Length: 227
Image 1 (cartoon, helix red, strand yellow):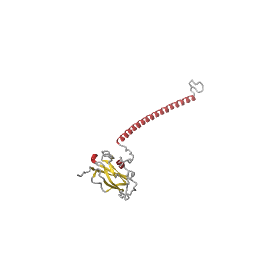
Image 2 (cartoon, rainbow, N blue to C red):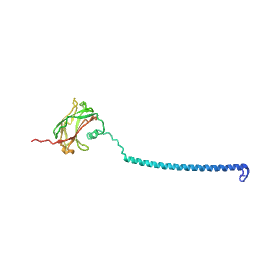
Image 3 (cartoon, rainbow, N blue to C red):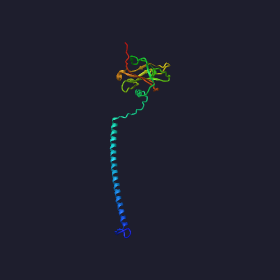
Image 4 (cartoon, rainbow, N blue to C red):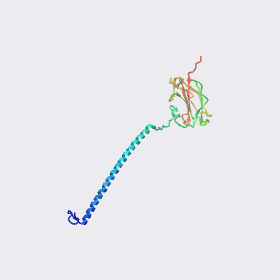
């Protein structure tokens, strides 16, 4: 093909020969570059697929490891602070709260307590060093009676439906700091209840920083009748 005369006929012009030779070389070079690019794209695609496969395998192993750890490790649950209630006094005492003052017994409990026979208890309020703390008489301290079982149950009435605590079940601090329960009367014997005993608790419901006094193992017997 000639560039100067008839394009469809063959010629030996040096210009035509050089032109078509250069075109042929460029075409060959372009084909080679395209082939190289295709090969590079294929290699990158294979490498990318391999990376995705390895990543999926790693994620599966991590998921399996996480499930194993969660199955063996118990995550501690946060327990909300126990609010005061007379029925839940023992949970409230043991809830981890810090007490700055304490109800302290003065003297001893009576060796023998009889049903419907009054006895005297006296307590005061002390700090962590055992020193007496004088409280104003505006605060009322009470006595509560519980069963000796788990969990303890608050006793309000005896087996006959009458009040189980009578007499002095409430008292206020006196000028010297002593709180006197001068005539405490328990209106039931312990033999009708679990473990044949009671737990007696003295507390001030309005002062949460004072730790109540809990005395367990109290036995109440029937009164002796003299002939």
